[in-house]
Image (cartoon, rainbow, N blue to C red; front, top):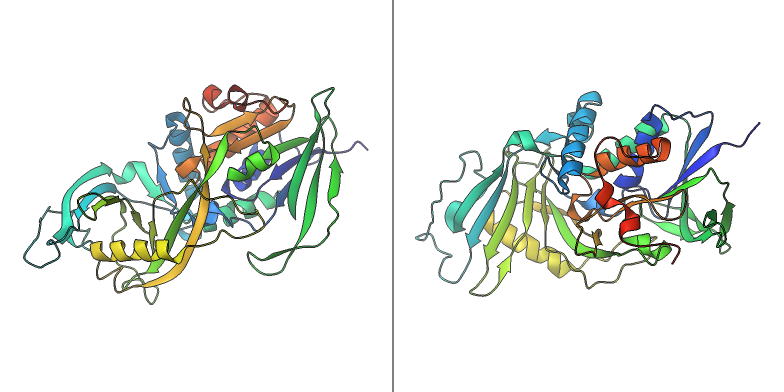
Length: 404
């Protein structure tokens, strides 16, 4: 009996899990001939996939990818009761300008910008301007941690996926043939959620056949395995708040996604984003690309001061729902950013090494573009080309060479 072809997905975030799902759904997938192995060095959705706000938009960039993925998210929500299983729902999005400069913090000053009546959880006192960015038909949200866990569960129902906890440390390529030869990983023993221990100091080596494939879905950690890859990490902090109306499990807050520009003084602006979700309010801050990536086995270190800053200014905009609420989570993660002037990313496709694929560089749109990425990777693997939309300009080979 011939050996099964093996597809190795490195990384158990939302990109890796949606890729596993769409591979099993591809018409050419045959579980008697192909097996899928996911290698994760920490925990499923432990990084940005579990700490993002979960905004979906049909206008996400790049345009074709964003539109396709928005439709796929909607289809999955209909098929699997996404409103129940991962808090899927549509919501409008607005941009909001506020002025907190000295002298404005008193009851006599009010800009009275006539905010939407159902946006009554924002205090209009400091609002100087607002604009509707999108209606409900083009913007939605998910709880990304719940979605990632669910879509992996659906993929594993194919009974051909194995999840291995291990940190991949090296990919070996045959210099003569420029084909994949093997890879090495350090086995990880899971103790509790987000707690990992090295279970062996000796790496395991996995030898590959000419049919085996590797798909790198490790976000900003891709350059740890492919040093030439022009992707880096941008650190972002966020908090989740149990608002006054969330307490007890009920929520009467009208869902909105708010992109805010807050004037702190005559010089400084602060641009947090606030999302009213089904069971909490999510607030995230500006990115920092000067922080070094941690070991993927470890959680990202949280700066309490950054979280306090988020809460301070979000509370001024929403003194009752946020200000009288309770912070239930302080967290930080790294977004994978493509450092190429001519492309905003992501990079999706086969590298110059045969059967070595990658999907990373999604920046702030990783949650939205996850479904399209997984579907397109499945087409590239089984059809040899992307058929759902044109992603020629996202080809990794345009921006770097592994074999150099």
